[in-house]
Length: 232
Image (cartoon, rainbow, N blue to C red; front, top):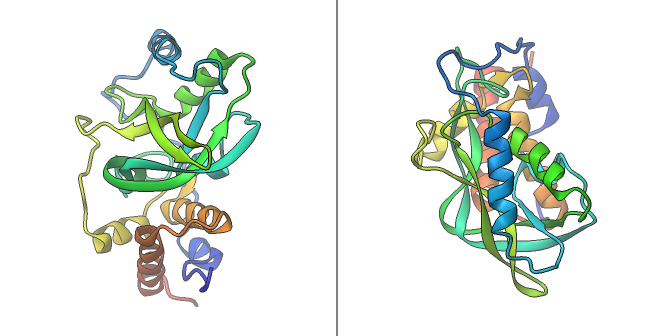
């Protein structure tokens, strides 16, 4: 790519702080083992792959932290969806005192990402691990579904996670400046929201993917951190 990232590890270090895991938010209904098993069965029974490897569409942290093994990776475009920091969080990379935002696939536009071929062995077990990472409470915010994607091989189907707009954690479309203010401050026991953004943009850039919205956002986050936590 033609220019360097404005957001750096130095920015991350300036806003990182140690945060203990508070555990599940009181009053929120958690997914059970039976709930997860039901989702695994639902997805497997509707699998349209017809003997081909099941593909997972990765657009954010699944690129740099895939959770489950994969045998191949290819560039892909999901039509009708776009990356958006529209999922409100009070845990993981945020806290109750300093709520954050996580990226999700929201309706509209298109999203350039990658598809990961999953090995056929113990697919149910793989999906169980994946689902337990992607959703923990009811109603589900990050909803699993089969997506139509375009790859070098043509139109294909891949499993993806999309924003459930009926979720109480759906933030809607927020101005970039407001998102930047949140990401520059939010931190949880998994680390900072700014680090999540930096990891995602770095991994996309390494694959030749320039998401204009995220590129602009990382500049705004860096500027906000420079303002609230200047170098000593």
